[in-house]
Amino acid sequence: MRAARRARQIGATALQIFSDNPTAWRRRPEPPADAPAFVAYAAANGIDPIAIHASYLINLAGSAEPFASRSRANLIHELQHAQRYGARLVNTHIGSHRGMGHAPGLRRIVANVDAILGDTPPETLLVLENSSGGGDNIGSTLEQLAEILEGVDSEVAPRLAFCLDTAHLWGAGYDISTLEGATAVLDRFDELIGLGRLRLVHLNDSRAERGSRTDRHEHVGAGLIGPGGLGAILRDPRLRARTAVMLETPGVDEGYDAVNIRRALLLFRGAQELPVLPPKAFRLSRRSTRAGPGEAAGGRRRTRRGPVRPAG
Image 1: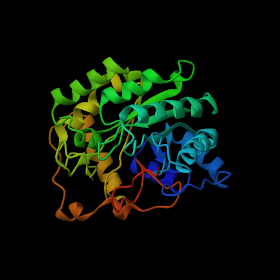
Image 2: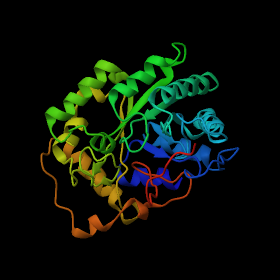
Image 3: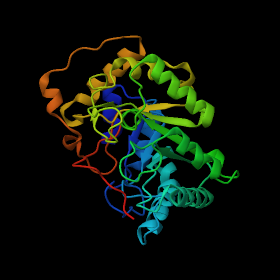
Image 4: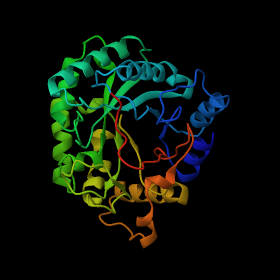
């Protein structure tokens, strides 16, 4: 309920939550007691869609046990319980092949996606998020995402969707800092996968250099991507029907979630420049946004003390 009330307070109309501790394997067997009230409140206040972000430990590409089995079981649990939180989308990082090589890692991902979607309710979509490409992670290019889709069984493929994180795109080397660059990325996604499958965008600027393979989020329009490319994504008419935009920006506990929503709305309405943020805004990090399970507003609230690597 705290997440839903905060979303309404800051003007969010979409919400991403953790259903449990994102840095642990354990999943609560039943939703918390206020889950029905949360679902009703969100519906009454036009907060839709609701997405669940799965545990950071999940690795769909790994083979080491018990982590491989836990990854599959964890995602099955999230998809089986998602509707009890009013969620139709379960977003996950794809994972790392951990030195096995791209081809074996891809086969593991496809096998896991087939099994997970075959054992979960048809109303809920599994959403795979692109990576910034660090280490042995799979999914840093649009071509790799398309490879996964091509390998998945046709019977379950309609329930597979994707998320593009703008900071991850930038870290992977995509120049989305301009209208032309951002549009080209969306065009390529449409060509390879289809924009109908782009159900989430994580709208984050970046503190990292383009192509650095690192993931360091910054306030909307205040990082190295800048307002031009982020505004182009927000204003692209092809995304308005089905794609929800979530913020994963610094300083949620200090009120910057509301600031970043206002900045995103300015870009959506055509602004080419944004107000200059005070110096203290850049001393914040996602470390200051620690929250318990289920607490998120206008994007997810989370702590990152360093790279969270998938197990296995």
